[in-house]
Image 1 (cartoon, rainbow, N blue to C red):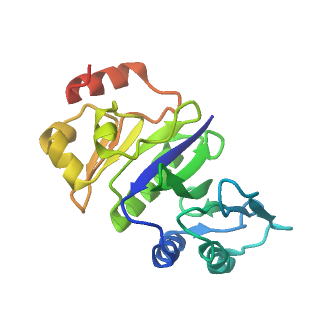
Image 2 (cartoon, rainbow, N blue to C red):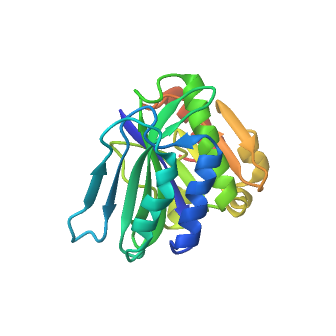
Length: 225
């Protein structure tokens, strides 16, 4: 199953943010074209044919990321979107796709993956730890898990808060305060972590298809009906 963790970024996309974003990923062990053939795609505008590139052979090409990013940021960042296939190399390895673009004219960042790339709990938690570090570093408003059958996260904060908690959820400090810090931290979930920026990461379970019993307990605790 295909799935993703999506984040809302409150600012407009700009070259400084995008370069810092990828520099941070590389500093955390993310590489390009090391465990599978790298590729990336740039869509200048939803009405214009996208530009795709595939590496010819698997060979660590992480140093090419700034060059690729430079190509992307030369387009109108209010219209363009970008995706790149990346590898995480650490205690466990996994691959994923970073998407940077828009939804309803708001900045959307997504880490796309699947059950084959993230096959077990250890890898799942390693993936979510990377998501957590990015969430904290760049001050995203909120984020949540989405499987292939569901639409992107709402770009409106109030609409996001109306949604029931998903498999994985990230709340910034202002949202935590609205929900209730103690209520969130006492949620009967697989993992609840208070983050250094005052936010909270809530992992209900590690099954991409969901976990009905765990969802029911979490939703009741958080007051969803």
